[in-house]
Length: 511
Image (cartoon, rainbow, N blue to C red; front, side, top):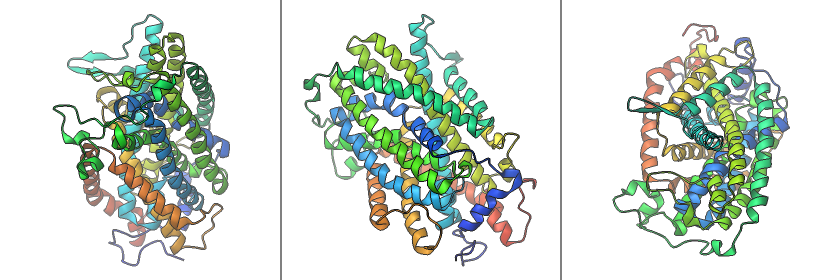
């Protein structure tokens, strides 16, 4: 059996933390999480984060600006990529039932440096994702205010800075919920998820009555060149590499659409971050991950087909001043304002749980990295409610600042590239762990793993290539900053390294 470190010694960038040590660390009394979740709780968490921004905001904008009616195919492509990755996540999570998701998995297979990189990447995914969805939540709150005659603004100006108080409000409220306990978070998700599922079914049934077959033609609109004056950074990297004029509509638009709507599927990896709080992780994690993915794929494809059948895709284009169309706007365009109001209420519910689960996932990754000493060790202490309360509050403040003060026009793509990168490492890591430690207990195993893992890597890299060149530039800069932090702080404070040197590693040690 592999030991806790790699043979290359104390200074190795690729020293690994054994699966046995990762599981043993979960029993430390000062940083122990309470196991209260079952398969149904996990499935609800997955559906809670999956049904939200994807349906209520991203679908209409992507159909109008990028893919046209072929957005339904874009969803299928994204779902297939997620399905391959989801199978690998399910085996890995059932084998290594420890908080931290892809970060923890990478520590057991690729070593400390790669684990840090993926953890830094997940910070990008969850924090920016939560902030972005909080801003969408605020915009729908404004629609409700408009219906009630209270104005439609959820922001105010402080000098030249616009403060989105609606986004700050929802993040603050959910931070309190997360601090008070994982079971309360699950109950809140259950109630709100039930509401938004009803709203989604309403959208599909009511919207179907407005479908006109003519709106599906052309199903894949002719490709269009980039707008005059725009830089090549807005085009997908793949279209630039093959010399295409752009990625608006046409085949490249369909593929770019898949990369964009991928944002709607990032929920199931957040499910894996709750491994330490699951009563029977070996069985319940695979069920929660794959179950939530199956449910939402059907709903997304159905909703997208209804949307582009109700109105012509050209009516869903973003306005010149940057205002994006939403699902509610589609009903307004066909004269069903009453339905638009119902959808706005459902969107508030849907986006609330998305923010909740993204913040939950962020706190558990941050917690796992702190417990390993790659971030300040003292932050890993759990509070009165057996939750990492200090970390949760810090994350709440950071997300509130981003959502309240920073425009987030390109955040979704940053979240997508971070998630896809994590999926690639998990797919490869599952295969590596199967080869290196074939005798580990696995209650869920992927059939034909080499084939599934290879398809997961290829499909995720393909989707990454279809993101904009500008997104790649920003992602590389973020990763470079992470490398600096690792060598300045994390490497010398690593608990794994301290254990090798015989130093104290308790979470109560001052940091």
